[in-house]
Image (tube, rainbow, N blue to C red; front, top):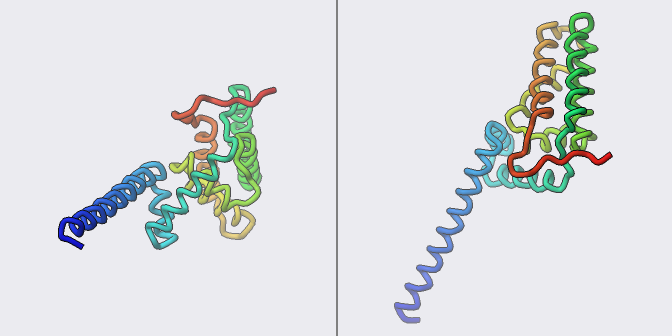
Length: 186
């Protein structure tokens, strides 16, 4: 092998390596920007950047296959009224309000097209389009899971309702800039 051929091969290997590095860097930046705090949480939970990014990319692919849609204006109005009832219920029955808030959030997710069978899968799916509020959902569910135990204060339950509200409002108002609204056909 002559020197010119060797230099061409070395140059090609370096160029290929550089292209892979640039691609991975762009992917990392895109995922970090899209998922925000969820990126860091997943990275810390998984313990490896590449595995965490693969998991986040897999979430995106899964959600792309779902038929997620926006709520119709009538649905948004109706769910908004139900939410006001949940907040009113809190005064007399905080535990009941938490149960209703959880049920309402699940119903809205279902109507929008998110599968709601498994909580961990719901959180993963919601994190794709709602990364800024997914931690609110986790916190609300953690409090809701303890609501029947002794030691859960009214303030804790109030915080749960606030956490549910953050996700609820995002689900009602979320607009996907890259797509046109899709409403259910009647």
